[in-house]
Length: 163
Image 1: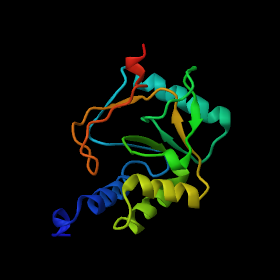
Image 2: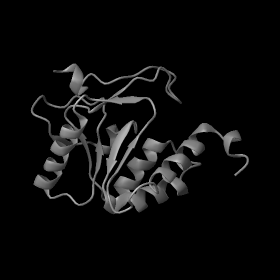
Image 3: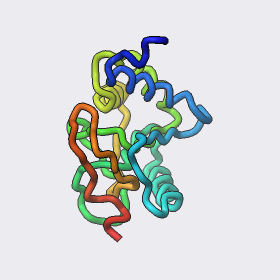
Image 4: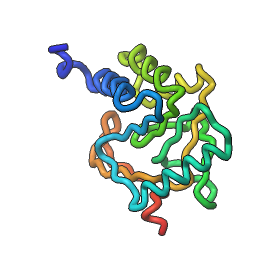
C-alpha cells in the first residue's frame, strides 16, 4: 500500500503486528518483541524455565507477557494469571503456536478501531485464551517515548535488576 506510512500510527502498528505472526515457522510459538526492549543476560535458560512451567501446567494455548508492570508476589519465577482488565503493553509477548492465526486475524480485523494491546486482550477474552505474566520480566523497556502515552516507562521486576 503506497499510503501505508501516511496512516495513523495505531493502524500501522496493528498491521505490522499482524504481519509478524506470519514470520518464521507457523507451527511454533511466536515471541514478538517491540524494538525498544533489551533481554535479560540469561534469556535462553529463562525461556527454558518458562517452557518448563508451560509443560507443568499442560497449557496448549496461552499468551505470556515476558515484560509487565504488575507487582506479582515475590517467589521463584512462575506464571501468574494476568487479569485481562489490567493487561497493557506488548513489549515482549510469547504466543502459543495454536493461537497465532487467531491473534493475527484480530489485529487485522480491528486494526482501525483499537490499540494493539486492547486487540490482544479482546481476542484472548473472545477465544478463552489465558494470559499470563512471568513473575520477573525477562525484558526491559528502554525507549524514551511511548506512542499514545509520550512518557518513559520501565518495569521494576526486570530479572537483571533483581539479581
